[in-house]
Length: 111
Length: 118
Picture 1: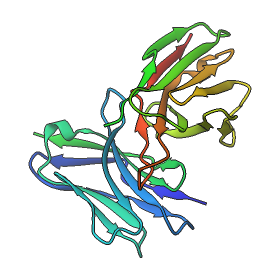
Picture 2: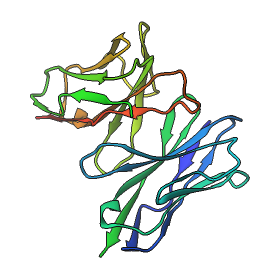
Picture 3: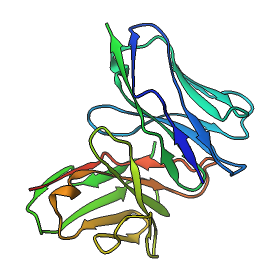
Picture 4: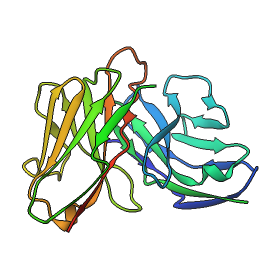
């Protein structure tokens, strides 16, 4: 069975500071992928970053980086230099054939 | 990047009527499409997986006779909510995957359809 867990229902961060959103997962698959998506109030799902289970280096995409700790089965998202536009829901997702989403974390960036 | 469209973006209907939602991959061929439902302040829940030309695979607890899925071509999948009731009011999101040439099977999401059943 696959499971993905986000334990932070809501987070605050001051503008220009960094923030870490937690994500842990469980799977029996050897090959899998981990995704992070942003969902603003409009509802669209915006792809942020991907980490493959065999990738040796942590993924980075601009201000987004993924802290992948395979032994601990965690894939935390780090957003550096937060901006007001970063306020949104953030979902972690586990993929082998289909995507399984975590419950999400609502991030609010304070000016 | 790949673009997926959904139509309509919003729909309001009366209880007992049926509503069809279209999901199109605009610039790639989608061998697999997924349908999700999202209730307010909740996560996306996978409803079903559809492969072009074959019957959809529904997740446990999803009524296949109520949520009819047709994946008639490599660029179009439709979700029909039959005899809709107020509890079917939700945000429905589709995603599409090309199934080849990608190392990590990225899914491309449509913008979603907000269904309100009165």
